[in-house]
Every structure is written in C-alpha cells, then in structure tokens.
Image (cartoon, rainbow, N blue to C red):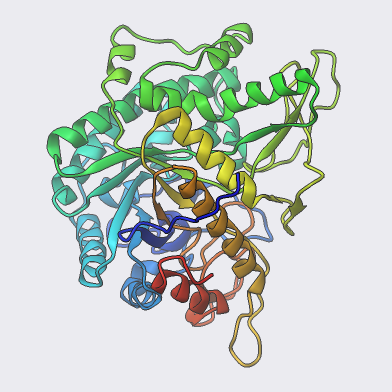
Length: 470
C-alpha cells in the first residue's frame, strides 16, 4: 500500500544498537567469570575465538561515549550468565554484578536506555556438562539467575529480553553450538530443550512483573516472513508450514501460552513431541509479555516438498539460510532478491511484511533488536572506513520500517546489529557489522583502536532527525 501522507517515527523512539556479551566483551576468564559454551567450543583454524573479542569489558566507557556521540537513545546488550554465576547455579560473583552495574550507570549517565538480554547463546559450560537445556534443572537455574538480575538491576533496567533467538537454537543448534551431542535423538531432544526454555521464560516473565512492576519484558526470537515460491497452492502450504515451525511456534507460546497447531501436528507426526509435565501449560499462559523484540535479517522462500524428495535445500546453511525438510518445505532462493557476500538475502520490503505479520498476529508493541549487514569492511590508509553499502542497506530497512508504522504497526525501537564491530558467531572478525570499526584482525589484536566508520556519521544524522534524514 502506498500512502498519500507518511507518518513520522514517535518522538520517544529508541534509536540504538546491539551487541552480545560473548561476542564483544572479551575478558573471558577475568574477575571470577566462569567459562561458557562459547568459551570452550572449537572454532575453525581460520577464525578467532571469543577470548578477547572487541575487549568491551575494558573499553566500555569509551564505547558508550561513542554511542552517545552517535545519539543512541538505547543500547541493547546481553549479560553473561557466567559473570554473574560462574558455574550457572552456585555462588553469585560480586565482580560480575559490579561490571554490569558500571555499564548500566555509564548508559544512564549518557541518557541511553539499557535494554538487557538475559541469555544470548552463552550457556555456562558447567551446566552444559549436566545436559544443558535438555536438563530441566538447567531451566530452573535460568529462573534463579533471572531472579539475581532482577534483584541487582531491577530498579534500573526498564526493558528486559529473555532468550535471544531461541528458535535458531532449536532449528540450527549445530550451527550455533548449543546442540546436546549426547542425545540419542538430537532433533527430539532439541524440542524438549525448547519446551523447558519456554516454561522457564514464562516463569521469568511472571517473576519480572512481580519483582519489577515498572519494568517491561518480552521474548527475542529471530523472525522472517516466509514467501511461497510460486502461486501454486502447494507452495503456499509449504510457506505456512515453515512460518509455523520457524516463527509462530515460539511467539504463539510466548504470547498466548499455547502451541501453534500446525507446528504441533508436525512434531506429533515426526515423533518430536516434548514431554509436558502437569502444570506446564498453565505456567505458559501466565507469561504475559509486554512487547515483542525480534531480530530480522531477511525473509525465506518455500516450495512444496514431498516425502520422496531427495534435495530440499542447502546442506551447510547458518541460521539465516533455510535447510528444507522432506514433506514439509523445500528451501529455495528468491530470484527477486540480491544476496550479501555471505549469501544472506537482502529484503527491506520483507522487513515491512514481517513487521505487519507480527503485529497483526499479536497486537503487541515491537522493538527490533537486530538488523544489519555483515561485510568485509576495509580500513583505508587515511584511517577511514567507507561502508556505503551498510548505509544503503540500513536506509532501505529504516524506510520500510517507517512504511510499517504508516500501516499501523506499533514499533518503538530500532537497535541494529551491531553497535560496534564484534566477533561473528560463524565468521570471526572478518565479518563486520558495526558503526564503529575495531582495529584488529583474526589473530592480531593490534591496539583495538576504535574508528568511526562513514555509517557512524550517517546514523548520527538519522537519529538527530528522528528518522527523517535518511
């Protein structure tokens, strides 16, 4: 729909940026921090680990000052569970509390709203050795960890995100590094993990409302609208299948406290149903999120697949490249879309479509907690980084988000990935997303100097004009 008159972004819109603890902080074993699965997992020989990352732990004041210079109204970051409770379920580490208190204070001193993710892929390794999320006691430990966070920071943090991209941990556990390798049926085990996480999330949402009555809390999945490959009705059914399994399964439970019927039928037919204990469904209904946060990078396209199909999609995709499944859907590339150098499709109009679908379905305010372009940024001899491609990408995304607001979608914030360069989960340092360049290579830390990219100055103007000057 094209409008004769456009609407503006709300005056109190949260322009900001995002990071995660294990990808940006470094200091992986300092000040009492325990090891997470991201610290202990094996990375490829050509890719750095997360031990130093961007060293945000020691540079947080400098980094927050840069965010303030850009004009950030909000900063979405995650808290490392292992900094707060080193083994995941034992003694609280006061040094961990102290660090995040200083980080929150620094945000507040610069008029930046802290938006806190409680869990972002970095399960304590001690809990992984006990079975990880496959063990219900780990889910209970997450609730206890949340209680520590609410006690420590509940009067200072107004916006909480529960679990980052839970759907990606289930659908692409091997790529993210969260699969339980000891499980006899890995896929069934993942959906059991999913159920435990969903119940824990519901308990945490209820706990937040009880302990922090002035705060708001919501889930943070990765959502991508799914297109049918053609107008063939069978392709449309395939798209509905993928939408249900990839997107609505997670949000239907978070918002309505029930399993999506199409996803449930799929789990039942494939013998993937989780064990559901007495009282679980009642707990799920008590969650009552205040908003939906979601990460968006692209859309997906699905075609009909029979049980006899041999090839249903790529075999080596990460969490943004669909793999397909026999009898459910075939993953295909969209011929109308360009792709990045990392093979992710670019679809700003699909961003608008995804916002529409989420708001129509759930009628809750939305904040975008990731959206960005990973590329091979080049530091020039004169000290500049001309990332015009990132500016073009984000300009188109913001323009379509503005159209979604004109469509009636209630969007209250945009925190693209990432505020500053960090270590990509799959591609190391070479895949850069930030507005700020961190001068290091995969294995040469150099001086970790912070350098403003061209996109830094562009985003500064966007924020200063409240999205009018693109």
